[in-house]
Image (tube, rainbow, N blue to C red; front, side, top):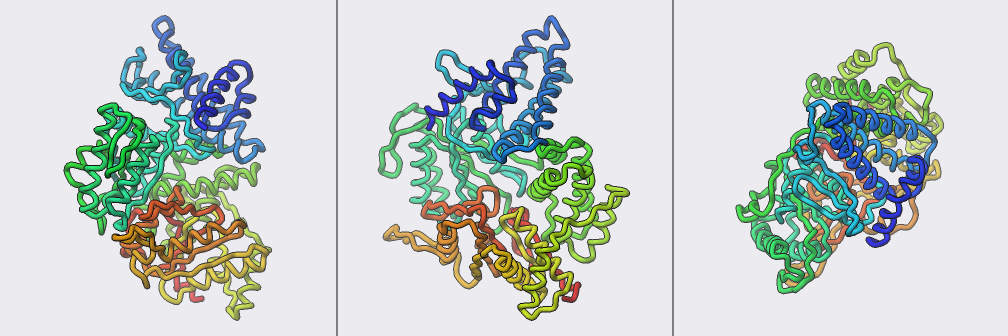
Length: 606
């Protein structure tokens, strides 16, 4: 795999000089295209630095060239494209927008020399003619590209915060240490780590740490990472029990000592293994929640800490609008973020409101699909519809007037009707009557909203007081799906009737035998069914930090349940988790931000 990708990347670099950029973009795997795109940007900027002594406007010319490349890509993404090509172009726009901003910053700050920190702190790509390989440099650290096949996935919008995390994380690896990003929920700790691995072409495995993991499970992970040269990202690391954490510090020190000693073999837990010095470990932690331990001082010393704060949301918004093909990205981003900042300040402080990064991203994806479906519609009207239709379901009755007022202030004179599928609403109404329920328009609207949420979020909380119609909404949606020809499989569990070990499974202490849990068995069985008909797992029971925190890596973009046996069960694209809950009193912000929310109020009287 690695040698194939290396050959493709080398050939692609030669081809770039022989054809137009549009032809070149069609040809290679997405990761190769992105890598060479950064290389050409590095060459352009360093070429401008070479000319800047004789021509003070060389950097400005380079900036104008970058703006033209970006606007060409935005025009391309508006066309009729295949899904893989659209994803590749969206990533290119994301990277090129950052490249444009960096060149603008270099010009504004009158940086005249390539050795200055503003340029050295960027992740740059060079072609090494001697080794016939791609070298990546950031500050004084150099990495060879890893050639791990990454597929064609999303890349993060790079903000000034991301740049700072890149510098700190790469310096940690350069100094043979791990890295520990810490900060509030939804600031992008895990995603930034994954994005850095994608930039360097490394395999990364995200492990959702839980108190079911013991020191032998951890030793197995460390052995695998060191022998394969992969990276491990340990999410919520401080959920491990203190006894396991203290042994982890000894295990990880074995790995770092072998890297520092430039050893080709090392021993850990009685086994001797090959050593790949490009491996790395990252631990992400949220501050002080229930069930978290304090890290031992010996372990802290092996991980370089980074404090991750809230990123520049307007910049992220603007870049994502551009990559979805919107022209007025800057104005739309400002309106979007103004609405969310005002909602945070003016609406009631309901526990289920989330105006952070994950909520923003899901609305942007919806706005992009609206834009492609109705290219002639005005961009402001498209954004208004996305913001209204995907926030109304979670807003409580007393806040609806305030929210409607904010929308009309920010989008004056724009009125756009809800996009309704009257045929499917008719199917839902028929299902309601078959179940001998009253076809109340508010109730049918809630069923429709649940269906719309399940299209864009793979985890949904249906919230509300007892008797508000939470169970009825998903039952009737599944019946309507069945009547409409989409055979929906539903498995209903109550996570509170069993212990956490019985829910997720546990490794038997004496025999090291794996005993399956209710959730792990259900999820594995559903993921192994070959068809792509909808599969729903309903978790009907109150949330608390003991069981829900182990779902964090399933509920975010990783969509993987990581078990104490080191098995990883993937939530397939057609699978959904629906949590039926009364309130979020005992849920952490990390949990709240990960799910779409349908609030069913008993005030409507159905």
